Image (cartoon, rainbow, N blue to C red):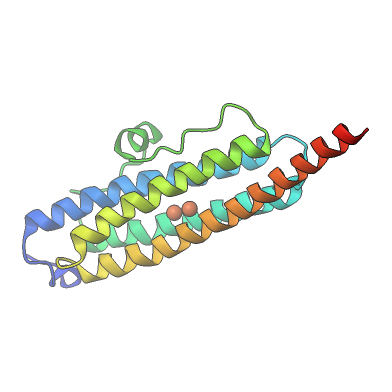
Length: 179
Ligand SMILES: [Fe+2]
Ligand SMILES: [Fe+2]
C-alpha cells in the first residue's frame, strides 16, 4: 500500500533509492553536526576565535535541523521499521558520502579549510539527490533544495571568516617584516 505522503512516487524502486540517498545524507548531517561541535571546542587560541566558535556552533545546530527534516522525510516515505535510519555512529561512517574528515591541526585555518571542503561535498551530494528526485518526488526535491541553500550559506560564512584570518595573518607578517 502506498502511504499518502508518497502517493506522488510511482515506482517503489525509486522510493527505495530515494530513501537510501536520504540515509546517506542523514549520516553526513550527523557527522557534520558532531564535527562542528568538536572543532568549535578544540579550536586553538588565535584571532577571531570567538567569532569562529560562534559560527561553528551555529552550523552544528543547523546541521542538526537538516538531520531532523531528513529523518522526517524518510519516515514519511517509509513509515514502518523496514527502512529505519541507522542509530549506530559506525553505520553513519559507512553510509555517509562526505564524512567531514576532521582537521588534523586545530588552528582556525585548518578547521575552516576542512569545513569548507565538507560543505562543498555536501552540496555536490545534495545536487545529485535533487537531480534524481526532480521528476520523481517533488517533496524531497524541495526539501533538498532548501538544504542546499543553507549549505551554500555555510560556505559563504566560513569563507568570509577564513578571509579575515588570512588578512590578519598577512598583516602580522608584514608588521614583522617592517621591524
Ligand atoms: Fe547540512
Ligand atoms: Fe552545512
